[in-house]
Length: 302
Image 1 (spheres, rainbow, N blue to C red):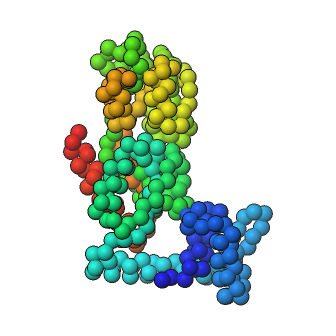
Image 2: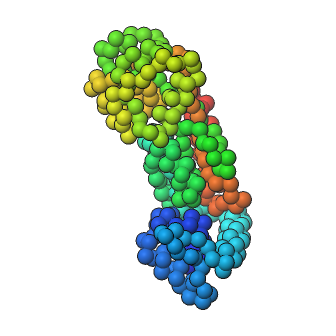
Image 3: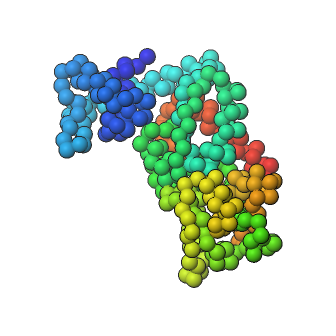
């Protein structure tokens, strides 16, 4: 219903980037540029200053952006009010998740949600925790689910469920028969790490720094970009690692990996993160509520 030119302009103005706006709107960059130019022709004035590969709003652009903000806020209120009356849940929601969560938690959650709300289209973007938070900050995604602390105080952060991390070893490893293992013992062996920016890696480093660990030196054998790659390297005897217990259930059943509890235990929350918006689409509210209920059930099973 709202003017498409105004929607595109508002996204570019919010992100101050034609490239990021195109990604957020699932459009090509030339199409975004065309829509903005049409709006500029409508008002017969420039809305952006373009200098040195950077853009900024002109005085007229600031005015249009301020009114566009109010228009879309009212539009969102109207949509939500009507759907509260009709009970109709439809639309598009874009979720971002860190690799561990996207591979091992979200498939069943989103599958159950789609079964209940078949008219909802869900777009999923996968990155490490650092990348997902950046997508939320830039409004590329509606909701992020991450596995490490979020430092941006301007975002809403809500705990979803607790995750337990364990040491993983190949069959025949010297520590394989231990009932539990300290990190100091674990770090005597080559360690398979996730990449920089990974929530799992950040949580592990925070865990080490909590203790008097000046003599703990991690012998990083490899840095890998996914849980599957880490598991494969450990199975091949290339080192040891620490991973979410929920990611290794198949390997434990097959006997290809051994999991040993850490001493002291290492737990972390999975976190929902989103913008502080006064009004959101009804489908976003419904997804959040559904995910909260899902996480409560999963926590109750532990």
